[in-house]
Image 1 (cartoon, rainbow, N blue to C red):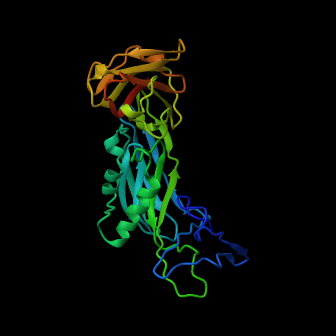
Image 2: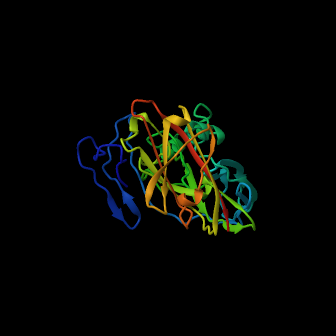
Image 3: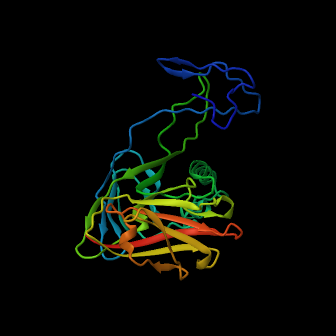
Amino acid sequence: LHPLSNNSSNIQNASDWLSIKTEDGTRLPDLRVEIGGMQSVAASGSMPALDIQHNLVMTLRDDTPVLIGRITNNSEYAINGATLVTSSGWVSLGDLPPGNTVPVNKLLINNNTISAVDLYAITSTLGLNTYGEADMRRRASFFQANMTTNAGIGYVNSGVYLMGWLDEIPAPVELRDQDSKSTDTMLYFEKLSPAVETEEGDVQLTSSIYGWESSVGDSITTSYYNMTEDGYTIRFQPSVPVSFREVKMLELDIQSNVLPAKILVSLWNFETGEWNVVQLLNYGVNHIPEAWKYVDRNGEIRLNINSDPNDYVEITGINFTLTVLP
């Protein structure tokens, strides 16, 4: 038991508070609460993960990668509002009672855009209404409190996850020797590790199967107020094993509020070890000449974005498609 991180270090108004650990648990014997008042205390612990089974397969092919399979809830608890979470979007799977199985068929399209990861858009997709019934309001508030970043967006950097709500597992917190009512809401995430299969012939690798690191923190997009003099850099690395003999094509799509010519884009040349400026000629997809120079043998791609500091430039999306021959 400990104070909430966003509260003062003391639970009891400028005086120390005491917790006592015994064989029966941990107690706060002198926690004072005014009549009609409230005190917030955080409790942390651990429990076994749920028994979730799946046979998901991610297939790399000459079209958009696809994730296909089934997910089974072998636990004794119902997973309400089960959701498949990928960097390509959030897909509602419905409620998943104990012993039930749900099919998955998801195209892993490019989706690194602000509109796709705006938390209000996600909560709407998940049916979390902040103005609805009490359970939905509580879930919406809980979800936003845990997912909100400084930019107000919820990027899924990489990976495949099962998310859902559990209402049947009570938190082991109570008022000692007093009648009390508990309202428990568990937001559950489990990372799933699909098998990867590669078809013969040319293979498309979309940015949705890449993880990334950004020099501006937890955002892949940015705007004028945090654009540094040197711009910002993003390092893309495949989140699944990929191998190839030849890079055949690289298509880059940078979405913004300005003309493409106003965005200065550079790609890291792995042959020369330096940045090369590439021209964006079109809104949307741009073909990158001599793409093999800008892709490392493990599939890594590095991108730098800059602009005139006197312009208002907002980057709202960064996506790419890499075509290789395995």
